[in-house]
Length: 170
Image 1 (cartoon, helix red, strand yellow):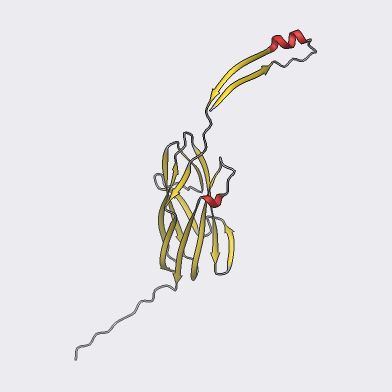
Image 2 (cartoon, rainbow, N blue to C red):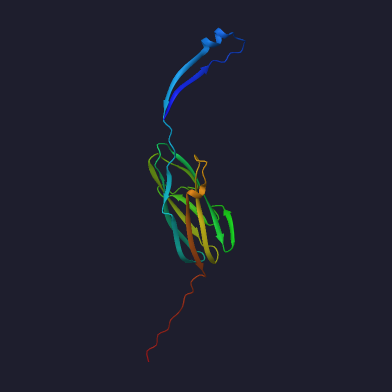
């Protein structure tokens, strides 16, 4: 908590003597409380499993605000494609939507003492094993975004091939 006083001075356009300056000062007592952000998410990992090229997979996660004020956030992804790791736009392979409104949720705010469910969709555009870190950046904090990240996994295989099975009797 904060307990102290604040000294305010009026600003004038012309010169003033010490007596005028002392008369223009106002002292105000201040009492307040500081609070750190308490921002987290659940779960810690999203497993999209196995799928075929061209499919879209959906998983949900929740942003949790245990603070007495709204917390603005930004979501972005680091996608590992084989041996390459790069920061990717969320619109490349991952999309985020507010589960309640269906609106895009790459940026937003979580109300005080509440949760915000986020729907993530993974677009399987090419073959391979994909590992991604969804970074959840608390815009009120100057801390590391790696403290709030979700690991995502998916394995994409070739499109399923329809097979015709012929059964004969005899």
